[in-house]
Image 1 (cartoon, helix red, strand yellow):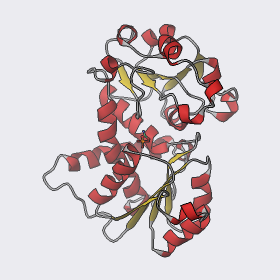
Image 2 (tube, helix red, strand yellow):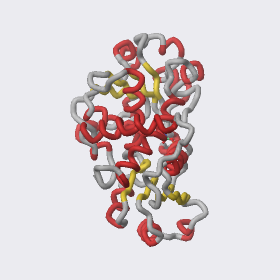
Image 3 (spheres, helix red, strand yellow):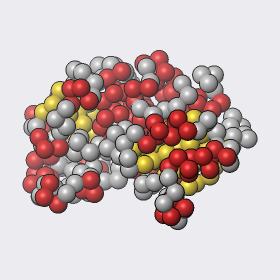
Image 4 (cartoon, protein in one colour):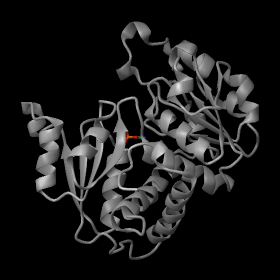
Length: 307
Ligand code: CP
């Protein structure tokens, strides 16, 4: 594939190739010499119109470990604040020889537009409430490395599904890889158009307590207050009481089940510190796996056999 814009861009074989390549990349991280020469002479641009900690830094680390040149572009402090359009910004980056553009943008669909304007590969690093495919890949990688497989796993994705690009990409990718997904949250935070918008065959529940004993993975989502009007925002205390994962709820999970969160977390709202910092939590591991997975994505798009 040339671009990675959506979880739907990956069929089962391609997704598995990315995960297997990421596993090989992870062995590099454990070596004394952490760098591979694979992308020497290539330029990766990180084009971020929205804040990010994990995604931006891990794409930078991934590109550098593959010996690519990295240009970090943040909309704040650029000519975007003078009104320059996404297209003109893209053409400027193109003129500077970008081989890959990693883009985060508040507008859903912005990476798809960008892909029409630049010659290089475009990677969607999160577009509005739409998709975040490399997060889904690193989540799948983490599940596979902790639980040994993806096919047949039951994954509950819990909370503010409505605003979650992480949920959307995970539903698409996990369905492709044979996992079963149940979306859990208050009715106001589950998209009403869930059947046509997401993959078929997913379940919806409004009752977290009944779902927990039956899952292998519980993925807690951040409540995205910045994407809600004040009148829409649920009371934090009420939300935590019904949908927050605390110690007693975590103990309803099967012994082997893991707890995930893409970060950043609202500690005390969707997840308590006791759960986030427990041995069942894979939150820090997800961040570490993100570097290997993004190395694999850049390698396969720019330098690998699939180009
Ligand atoms: N999970 C995630 O996308 O985190 P950042 O917003 O910090 O990149």
